[in-house]
Image (cartoon, rainbow, N blue to C red):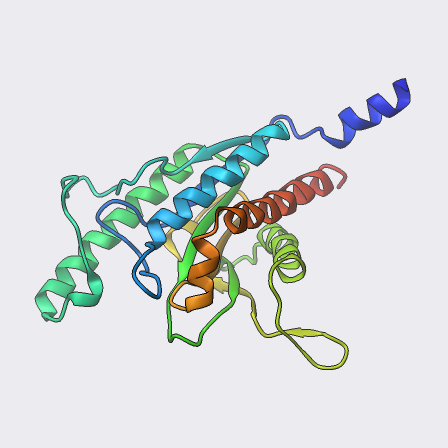
Length: 241
């Protein structure tokens, strides 16, 4: 019995690891709007970030957040400011919006770096045509390839590809058409970090079925569990290297 108990402690050992969860958008910046406009990206990402954080905490991993409420980071904007980028048609207004969004992202990135996390996970939802679906992951695009970020992304990618709703092609089931893969990008929140970082686009909320998924508490909890389990698996494997 004692040996079994010791094994349980060792297998769950993740002390001393801090994971920063970055719920995309917030405050003045709604992000994507869902199919029937029932959901906003900023609310979905915050909800799932809290769920992932709670699951990590149960495994002795310290979750920290870029934001824990519906807020933005641009101090030039008051809390009542709100942008609807889809409704902006005037060129000057678009420049004004882009300026404030860039400032917001820069401030968000500073907050992420200042917390000195061991891992950064940025959560987003996508938009596109009403037919588009699928998840995709991004790692930093920098001069030196981020191997640790890629390995972390691979853990999350594998978990999402095999544990979420699937749509397979081919007799061997070797192509999941909702799997949009792992890519590199120069997103602000991924730049100049000293730790592995992955940005996850959870799915296209402009698709009617995807919107239904994100209206379900059970689905959001399942998605959080998949991502949390992948992060834990990466941490445990990293400690063996």
